[in-house]
Length: 97
Image (tube, rainbow, N blue to C red; front, side, top):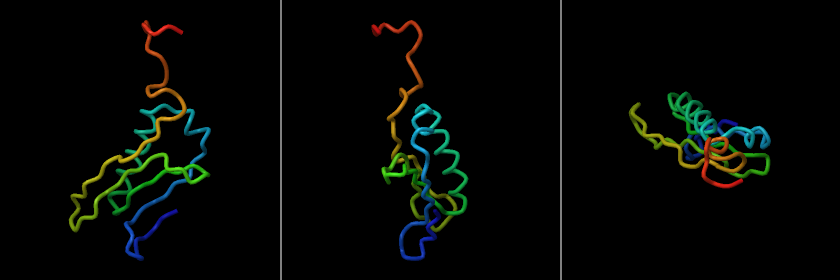
């Protein structure tokens, strides 16, 4: 859902994702998705927020309002639930199973 910002709120796109799919990808894949999606939308002056169907915020790529095209944007929130932060255990891990 796109919010145009006509009511004084920042322009943003809210995505509702499938929670099992989100949980199936690792943290770096989530970061990449959010960063690429956010980078594309910031060109049109939008921020991006990702929610599940229960309206829990899972990730946000927020751009500060600016009069020029040099908008400052960053990933402000990113869920690390689901698979491990990097998608599994490192090889030769010293952590016992």
